[in-house]
Image 1 (cartoon, one colour):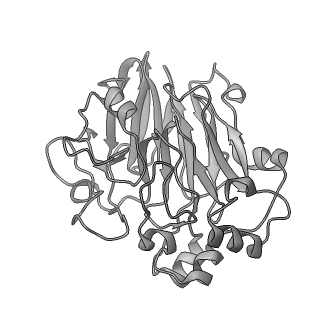
Image 2 (cartoon, helix red, strand yellow; image 1 turned 135 degrees about the horizontal axis):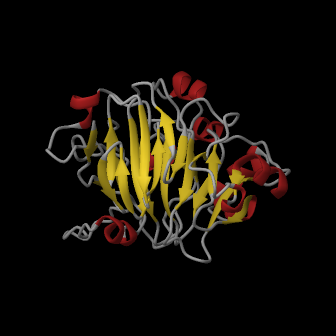
Length: 318
């Protein structure tokens, strides 16, 4: 079954969302609250420092049914994300840390594929520079000064792909429009008390339910050079063969937690009955015989494989 998804916009502390509105044909929220993310086929609840809205983050298919009532609990979380300002510096736990200290069976390893509409000067901040220690990071956090200088700045453009392992500090820059694929959690710790536009970050988000030492322990202090960082985590659009109808964006050696594929005319991907999430990035065509077009977000349920025909460019997350 190929099931269209309802819009599922989620509140965050940073500004954005206009690119999602344009991409999906949705309208901005009338209350003015930033909702710069659309959680696709989500069976994960959102955490904004407190659980203020019951069930926030849970996705629905177009007929109103909850995704989890149709397909069960998905082992992934897929988002559209649009940043009008830089996100705060943060990190997410590994699976062992989440199990030991955050009462969660999953961590939050993630990856990003940048979409058309990403600003020409967009960047992300990723990973510690060589020589950064836990003590240096604690001092920068307590002083709220010099945090970005301890991270690498990585320019990005549409078509680029970035992998973010658990524990790696990062901050998505302004002007980024992406599909994000991650483990199904909203676990994080945050190193900044205010967003660049001046919004205060709740302590619950900063510490992630931990004390100061526990929060600092989430970060991986494995500083690397810029070249080492890019070799490990960054794949430029130019390295993906344009002639291939189905390209695995995520190197198999990066993680066994999820997969992301870019598919064009003639491309097929095996699902073996696993649920997946598909985003039509450009054009129009057919997905397993169903008509699709740019901006469609789809739950793929109980299908053995996916096949694309026509001019559609489709990202498949599974």
